[in-house]
Length: 125
Image (cartoon, rainbow, N blue to C red; front, top):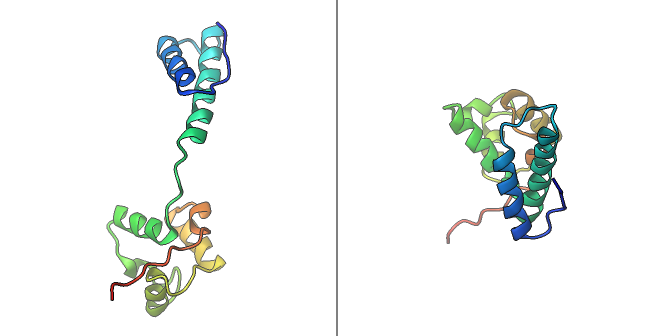
């Protein structure tokens, strides 16, 4: 089997068809090795072609709280007092390094999401 770099959508389609054909190949076989290489190439092409932007840090915190069935009160003591939580969640105060660490450790939110700049939300006049 000849494996080539994936440079176009047509190359991507061909690689996906090859992956489908090789799916289930034994791990320590030539077909299994080809499958591993193709999956890596497809993943790299898709990451470059269709990148997924990281979410806004505050939206990520809200999402995690929702997943856990909690509300902003769960953040009191993790990122500060009730008023501090309110300021941060409204975008009036940035997340500090201490807050980022605490949110990452207590809620498992990826640090690379939390260190991004917070989008400023304008209020309707």
